[in-house]
Length: 77
Image 1 (cartoon, helix red, strand yellow):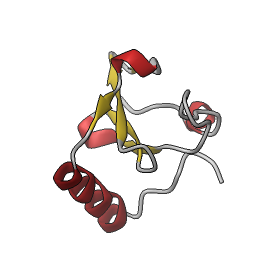
Image 2: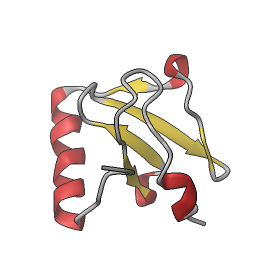
Image 3: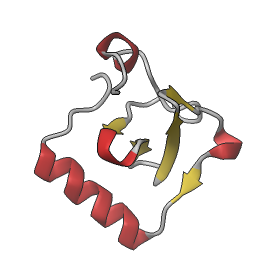
Image 4: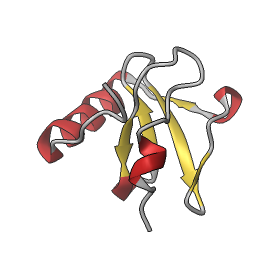
Protein backbone atom coordinates (compact mmCIF):
# COMPACT_ATOMS: atom_id res chain seq x y z
CA UNK A 1 0.00 0.00 0.00
CA UNK A 2 1.32 3.47 -0.79
CA UNK A 3 1.13 6.65 1.22
CA UNK A 4 -1.86 8.90 0.60
CA UNK A 5 -1.18 11.83 -1.75
CA UNK A 6 -2.65 14.25 0.82
CA UNK A 7 -0.11 13.04 3.39
CA UNK A 8 2.78 13.34 0.95
CA UNK A 9 1.88 16.97 0.26
CA UNK A 10 2.58 17.92 3.88
CA UNK A 11 5.50 15.66 4.81
CA UNK A 12 8.76 17.49 5.43
CA UNK A 13 12.09 16.58 6.96
CA UNK A 14 11.86 17.17 10.71
CA UNK A 15 15.38 18.61 10.77
CA UNK A 16 15.62 21.04 7.85
CA UNK A 17 11.87 21.31 7.08
CA UNK A 18 12.53 20.68 3.40
CA UNK A 19 10.78 18.41 0.92
CA UNK A 20 11.43 14.68 0.79
CA UNK A 21 11.34 12.08 -1.97
CA UNK A 22 9.02 9.11 -1.51
CA UNK A 23 10.59 5.89 -2.75
CA UNK A 24 7.69 3.50 -2.44
CA UNK A 25 9.59 0.40 -3.59
CA UNK A 26 12.19 0.97 -0.87
CA UNK A 27 9.70 2.05 1.82
CA UNK A 28 11.57 5.25 2.60
CA UNK A 29 11.32 9.00 2.44
CA UNK A 30 14.66 10.50 1.40
CA UNK A 31 16.23 13.89 2.10
CA UNK A 32 19.09 14.37 -0.38
CA UNK A 33 20.25 17.61 1.28
CA UNK A 34 21.17 15.81 4.50
CA UNK A 35 21.64 12.37 2.89
CA UNK A 36 19.14 10.97 5.38
CA UNK A 37 16.36 8.43 4.92
CA UNK A 38 13.25 7.90 7.01
CA UNK A 39 11.72 4.43 7.12
CA UNK A 40 8.08 3.69 6.41
CA UNK A 41 6.82 0.87 8.63
CA UNK A 42 3.34 -0.58 8.27
CA UNK A 43 2.44 2.36 5.99
CA UNK A 44 3.45 4.87 8.70
CA UNK A 45 6.40 7.22 8.08
CA UNK A 46 8.82 7.19 11.02
CA UNK A 47 9.76 10.87 11.08
CA UNK A 48 12.06 10.84 14.10
CA UNK A 49 15.56 12.22 13.54
CA UNK A 50 17.03 9.70 15.98
CA UNK A 51 15.56 6.81 13.97
CA UNK A 52 16.61 8.10 10.55
CA UNK A 53 19.51 6.61 8.61
CA UNK A 54 22.37 8.64 7.20
CA UNK A 55 23.49 7.18 3.88
CA UNK A 56 27.00 7.15 2.47
CA UNK A 57 27.99 8.75 -0.84
CA UNK A 58 27.49 5.56 -2.85
CA UNK A 59 23.98 5.01 -1.50
CA UNK A 60 23.14 8.69 -2.02
CA UNK A 61 24.18 8.36 -5.66
CA UNK A 62 22.09 5.23 -6.08
CA UNK A 63 19.02 6.84 -4.50
CA UNK A 64 19.40 9.97 -6.63
CA UNK A 65 19.60 7.72 -9.69
CA UNK A 66 16.37 6.00 -8.69
CA UNK A 67 14.71 9.38 -8.12
CA UNK A 68 15.91 10.65 -11.49
CA UNK A 69 15.11 7.48 -13.47
CA UNK A 70 11.61 7.15 -12.00
CA UNK A 71 10.85 10.88 -12.18
CA UNK A 72 10.01 11.02 -8.47
CA UNK A 73 8.78 14.46 -7.48
CA UNK A 74 9.45 16.02 -4.08
CA UNK A 75 6.70 15.87 -1.49
CA UNK A 76 6.05 19.58 -2.01
CA UNK A 77 7.64 22.49 -3.85
